[in-house]
Amino acid sequence: MKPAQRTHQIEPFYVMEVAKRAAEIEHSLLASDPAMIHLTLGEPDFTAPERVQQAAIAAIRQGKTQYTAALGLEQLRERISDWYTTRFKLKVPKERIVITAGASAALQLICSALIEEGDEVMMPDPCYPCNRHFVTSVGGIASLIPTTAAERFQLSQQKVAAHWQDNTKGVLIASPSNPTGTSIVPQELAAIHQFVKSKKGFTIVDELYLGLSYNAEFGQSALALDDDIISINSFSKYFSMTGWRLGWMVVPERLVRTIEKLAQNFFICPSAISQYAGIACFEQESLEEYEQRRAEYRRRRDWVIPALNELGLNVPVMPDGAFYAWVDCQAWSEALKLPSSWEFAFEIMQRCHVAITPGRDFGNADTDRFVRFSTSNSLDNLQIAVERLAKLKLQLFR
Ligand SMILES: Cc1ncc(COP(=O)(O)O)c(C=O)c1O
Image (cartoon, rainbow, N blue to C red; front, side, top):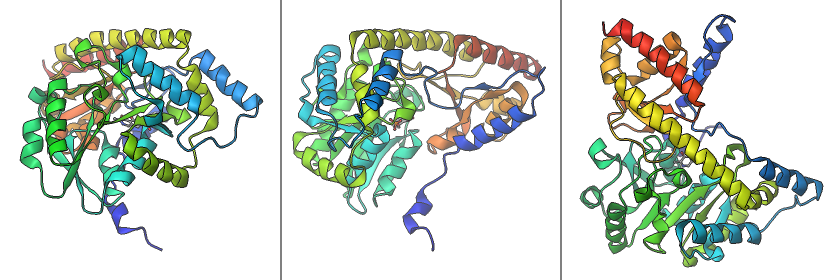
């Protein structure tokens, strides 16, 4: 038995190596040692609100645990449609909303639906590591286009046009992005989409962090631009439900039947229990709680980004969403005589007991000089992490 050829292109998730090492160090710590502060995983430090938990419990108790329709519960699709109306002033009919097992299943479905063997899909470098693997796992080719801070680490129309090949079929953009927390300028996205459309290609925008947007300029959904844009979304981040495996996507009407067939075959349906809980996310009290959480994420960002800049751990673009800081650690790596951000991350973990993710996971463009801090941790912990780094800085840059 040997694994299929295409699996060789799928790289490991390097952050797991970091998490493993962090756990090893943690096990060897004495009670008097400072505890490890985990700033690696892109996961909310909040759980689902009480009301949402109760909705899941009620679904179990009432036996609402059978398969649902492959496209998801009508009621949940309706609630999401209403949310687009109230939050984004957009008309998104429920018929175009497909409920999935997280954004991951949505990405897998849409890649299976649109990509032929040998088709190329463009994405910015750096980007969410799994994106390239969703594309390659269906026989496509991920084309990572290096981006710069001046471009907010996003694609531009100019770059998309310059790199477009005969076999290019579309673009996949996350806005706000993981690992940078930066969004694409709406006019740039509109120009990219227009170009892609002129080539009869597809535009997929992963909007899983859109709920956690801190700047009105970037707070609108890409769906406002055109019904042909495919929008990916999730309950994982804004709705604090990573392990519940629930998400959705909005697709053009003519794609719904294809997606439905694939979803029936791949997954039968998303978790019924999570879907019933998902309905409770849109109750007024839940939405208010989520908005308080968004304010808290923003408060953390507002404190930690200037603090990192102050330390010479430069964040070249202020994140406008999500809970990440994409940090240039080159000066520190040099001071520590380390070849790259990979070694830097392990050194910081060892010396400061602060776990962060090396840039390597997210692509090739300058990723050896960047690390990602996940700021989804309490402000107290973020402040302790910065204090420890400040102490190390005093030793390094005397
Ligand atoms: C940009 C991006 N897309 C998709 C995902 C997958 O999310 P989900 O938990 O909804 O499958 C993540 C998870 O971190 C992400 O950062």
